[in-house]
Amino acid sequence: MSYESVGDASLDYAFCHYGESKLQFRGPKQPLKGDFIAFLGGTETFGKFIPVPFPYLVQKALKRQCVNFGQVNAGIDVYLADPAVLAACRRARHTVVQVMGANNLSNRYYSVHPRRNDRFLKASALMQSLFRDVDFTEFHFTRHMLGAVAQAAPERFQLIVDEVQQAWLARMELLINKLDGRVILLWFADHSPDDAALGARCRDDPFAVTRWMIERLAPKVEDVVEVAASAAALARGPEGMVFGPMDAPAARGMLGPAAHKEAARALVRVLKDPAAV
Image (cartoon, rainbow, N blue to C red):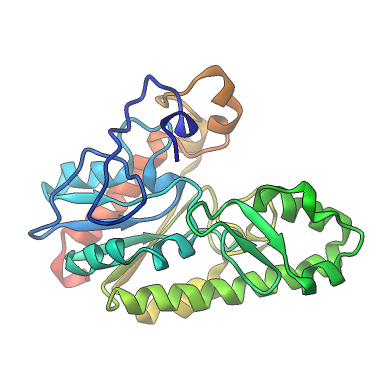
């Protein structure tokens, strides 16, 4: 990930490294000791275009170290392949894991880049046999590929949705086990996990994750925190975000600082009450 690929140069992400991980993380760098809280997740956890994303709002409210391991467009695979991050999270008091989309992980139909999980690498023989009318060499990103497949063959597309949902569950259970179950699962989106139709539409995040999947994981984690951004927060759009003119369309489709404040408040309510976790 390059500095320029994340956002406008006027927002300093203070990139840093932890241990032997090959990934870059948003700073400022925090010490991996004491009673700290770790955060794993995608674009929202990283805080693309957000001056103060929710992990740092939690740190300010609780006055406890919060380590942001968020990655832009991350899927579960990037964390499962990074033993340094997993080891750091096992030393944390809690690890908050944002619910990431089911599109950005390798499965029986297609494979993704091991670190940049939104990058589509190739379709499997099974995928190519099911969608002979789709030229997969045209695609570089999972979202673009899935959108084209959904348009070309909406009925067969459901097979992909079913597959990535099962792969997501298996991968999430593995991640939770590697973190010894000391996980707070965070749903942070512009809709509720009850909105099943939204979860399977290619333009919505987290892709293909719905209520039944969250409920399957709930007994395996310390707590589940659900934040569906309020109408008031969504109405404020990109207000308070920092981005260049070329990034304006992307920024308008993202959760802004007002929504991050709602996520932080919900997490603080759980994390400040020892009886809740």
